[in-house]
Figure (tube, rainbow, N blue to C red):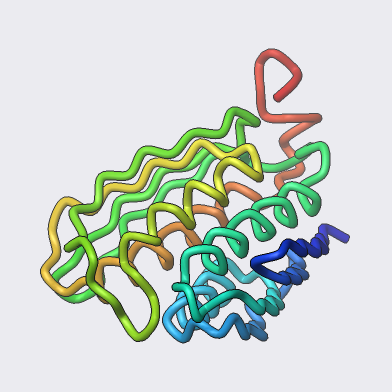
Length: 195
């Protein structure tokens, strides 16, 4: 059972993340940030991961702590579910069109966290109570906490909602490829024998 459960409680947020990498894409999300709920639902559906997220944060300040801490907890839960990473493909990539926007995603569960973010989103735009500049912070927190090398490129797009949606869906599809088990993979997918 490739499952993860993480609780993260600070003076700013209280987060619970539960997931099953071998699910059917069921999502049960409540963060207090509507746009983030929508994006996490898409992440679950398009990765086939069952995902439950509960978050209470200091939204009277802004969405920053809640969004970032959800990314941290989600990354930790994915790492927990992957365990020693034996038998997984390791790499994934996907091109995701969303109307006029395109997202190019490449990722590697290498154990060497890194984020490349080339997405020219209009700064300081809000979608509901979600600041679009938090997209990068969310994926940085996710990558750093699950040992993921993650490259996100959005070469074009006009609608910020579409651009972010393409990113989340593209990451989900690439992640689905990368965490897939393959009987041909003995141990970990590395010539070194270790990740």
